[in-house]
Image (cartoon, rainbow, N blue to C red; front, top):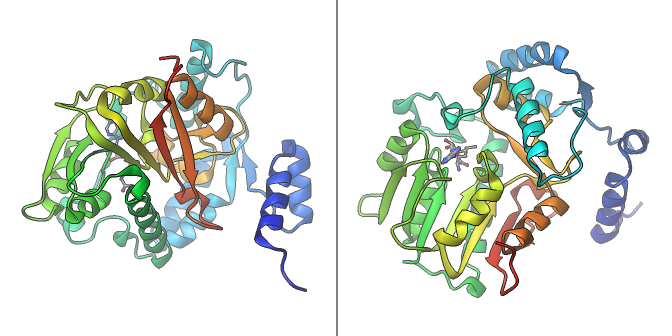
Amino acid sequence: MSPLPRSVAGAGRRAVDALPDGVRRRVRSALGRPLARQVTLDGLDAELAVAADLFGRSEDEARRFLDGFELVVPPGAPADPFSEAYRQWTWHVYERISGRTGYSVANEHSPFDYERALVRPFPYQTRSATVVGDDLVARGHLLRCLGDPALGLAPPARVVEFGPGWGNVTVDLAATGFAVTAVEVDAGFADLVRARCPVGADLSIEVADMLVFEPPEPFDAAVFFESFHHCADHVAMLRHLHRIVRPGGAVLLASEPVQQMPYPWGPRLDGQSLWSTRTHGWLELGFDTAYFDEALARTGWEGVRRPVGPGHGAADVIVVRAREAGADL
Ligand SMILES: C[S@@+](CC[C@H](N)C(=O)[O-])C[C@H]1O[C@@H](n2cnc3c(N)ncnc32)[C@H](O)[C@@H]1O
């Protein structure tokens, strides 16, 4: 049997994904694409113990296991996702998942072996060709989006990168000739990025929370690679970005979880996110696509999704630019 054209198959998938949860589960099971099994908070630690054991043997096996379950959707989300009550509800869910009382940016700290990371940073240290390949595809896609002539951002354009972590994107940007400022809250990562950057590159590093970072002068572009969703107040950050990026500049959100969610925004409930939140305390937010469009509009932005290609939706880039007029800032 010849396969369905991609557009038809994609439309079919989207239609199934739009069904109410219970119906969607039954339809996907019947189609041989069952959804992840659901676990409760009470059962979470037992699942994560299995994952910890698997991580000791194989990154791929551990990730496959984590991909196989998700948390039952927590009840009680207030109706208005822009309200204070809704924010408090998301913090409550975070506290339950993380097992911590409250969040601070100190929770974003990542333990790692500095000497080892100099030689073999993430993703290479996973020893998984799949993880490395996915990361390279995602970074390549971000660079291609940045190089879109419509943005007019050729090197040596000034780019600020928030949450560089291991510094892979930072190295890519600096080696390409961009003038890079990296803003990282974890001092250990900041040291690593400094050490990994090419000699002679135009790079400065600020150890700061992205929410309070004040630019010396506005940048041509701001880049987030898997870091925007760690921000403790994304609406405030979107407003803040008007001071960070010059008029006509761009914000690129790469590999950020703007996707289908069981609620407008809040902690993600998939196994890998649960692992990160419970093990480290990291904030692993996700944003429903419709909600995120509305959040952009309310803060004076509009975004265009640049899909990485069929089957790689997690690595899509959202190119965000200021709305011309009428923004509710
Ligand atoms: C998932 S890691 C992504 C790292 C890197 N961009 C990558 O993809 O390899 C998230 C990064 O954001 C940083 N981060 C989290 N919250 C932050 C904040 N409020 N301000 C600045 N950096 C933050 C973390 O320390 C971490 O380096």
